[in-house]
Image (cartoon, rainbow, N blue to C red; front, side):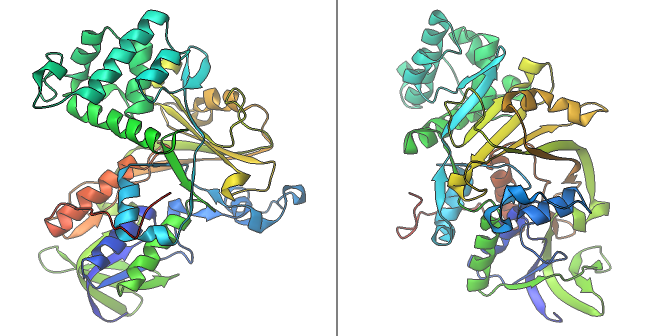
Length: 440
């Protein structure tokens, strides 16, 4: 360990492992340390014994749930957009050679007391039970505008300037009702709250296009998921870093970050050993004095013996409950997968519900999600603090990742990767597709 490196990465969560892999490809000498003896941190996938050990210490797991090796239970519920940023990073880095993916079968949204499929294009909008006949026509015109808008052709713009006009203005222009705005903003554009409505419309249009193009790639939903659980992703990027010369140390305590007289990080100390580095990257748990709490997250992992009701008996779905539908400030997310993804024995399903805590009774806040699941065989819940860095890292060369959020997709995490990469290197992350790597 007593060597000099370009970068030391602390923690093997997915964000940290992606950055480790990308920086290794760039030719950086990387040392990757984790105090845990397993990869993944909050992005890990646990077997049944590990799950009970984490959530119900001292309690024996039920024998009727099958073998440990048949279970890969994610600690966080996340899907990949088929054309999203994380998928592009996987293809660019060729990590796709290590991981097999399967499509998520459906994307749903909760509206007026029931769940319905999210329309992925203008034709699906016409068939959607979410809207009245006249609202369907308005939504169809809106989605046509989204897909046909061209910067060089004013006739396609409907007198809307994407950089000047807000989404509130756009919604009014097309006469869309609040319920329609809910599923467009939260189930298609995947915003966490309502703040986007007052901002220029360009980003929202880009997000809707991403949803539609991801939907078109495979047809059933815009999402894909790695076989054997999300824990495969950080391990895939760890292999990538190792191929390019990265050094990994699991089960290695981290006692302190070392700084010079100007407060700039120069290395990491573990016991009597000190590894030197020009930059240090890590999750918030390694930098308690440099992060602030931005709220709490409540999450419930539920084992089911049936598909989620009213989802056409699909083997996997995402359901978003927009906050306006349940009088909240934040959305509720449900991610459901099954034995076809090799994460549980045949006949079982894993449904994970997440949201941001708003009251003194966090478990009551996921009740709207639990109601949609039907009978639950077993459930495991926890409340976690969410952290973000207080500074951007350019002064002290400590680049701290954000806590994993409540969403059931990876787009926010991919944005964090891009932002940190640019701050560390001074360059935008440019992804060029490799012909040898593709997700099919």
